[in-house]
Amino acid sequence: MGRAEFDQVSKGFGEVLALADFTLAVEQGELITVLGPSGCGKSTLLRLTAGLESLTSGSIQLGARRIDHLPPSDRDVAMVFQNYALYPHMTVRENIEFPLRMHRVRRAERSRQTAAVADFLELGELMERRPGQLSGGQRQRVALARALVRKPALFLLDEPLSNLDARLRTSVRQYIREVQRRLRVTTLYVTHDQTEAMTLGDRVVVMNQGRIQQVDTPVTVYEQPATAFVAGFVGSPPMNLLAGEYRDGVLRVADQCLPVSGALRARLECAAQQVTIGIRPEAFVPGGGDHDALVALAAPATREVLGSETLVRAAVGADQVIVRLFGVARNIPDRLVAPTDALHFFCTASGRRIGP
Image 1: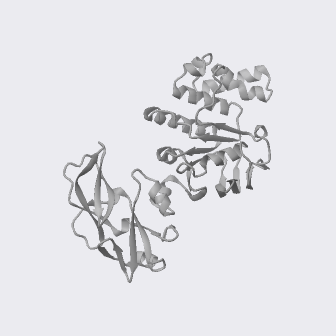
Image 2: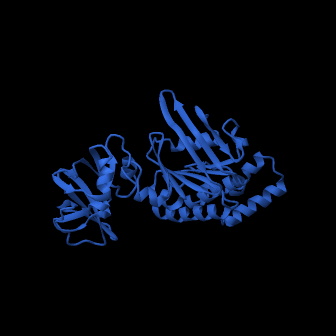
Image 3: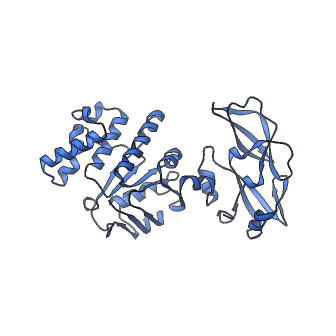
């Protein structure tokens, strides 16, 4: 087991920079989820760590040794791929044993370790089957077993649940978290699924265009997004973003003017006049014409009833926002308001958060 450190890791493919100055320390036993849209550099990060690609610059250290110059077999890293990459002609037992065979572990010890991990992952009744005879969830457990059998110092998972249906993703996700906590293996888990990232990670790394946008706990990433990109990416539905202008104690949003005072005014006085305003869908509540709240007008026949919640499309001037009302909202008020203390502010030019 070990602490993984990435120091200004970069990777270029010709003129395309897939990963830029990636710096992160993953503590012993920590599970870090790496979240971002397609093409943001998530899988490149794992391939660099596993030794499937070479670094353009920077370094990767695992425990007390630098590993980025070592061949994959010497890195003490195990990786689970998106498509599981099981050998179809081998049985479950042979697939799990394969890494031990490559490391020339003696037969008796191979059998012992394989039986132990198979028992741990509840694969005992499947050992003589081949991958084609398994369900998606069973194949996923075999892939996990093959990666864990040699007790790696670092565990890499590249969107391992993307091929499973929604119900199965939930159960396997919980299973992965339980296994990781029991073994305390240092883990990097790449995903584009926000639910996976937020429920699995001790910390979440949000990436965009090869660069880290924010590293923090799931709750902090949601409640205090560091950039407008994070605000507009994390959440389902994501945060509403509106263009605004601050001048002389007044915040102008579309056709509304909101007076600003106290700590919020002090924050905005230090920022640029052009600001991006973020409002979570659940921040809106039914209300009247509050002079210190952002008002959205609900459009008729635009609700989406999802059972536990109702999504409503509303208008702030010419801009559209999504409002989340909990439960089945049969009578939607015409006016929905978000108080100023529920608003988030970002510098329009840099995208960075304004204030704490």
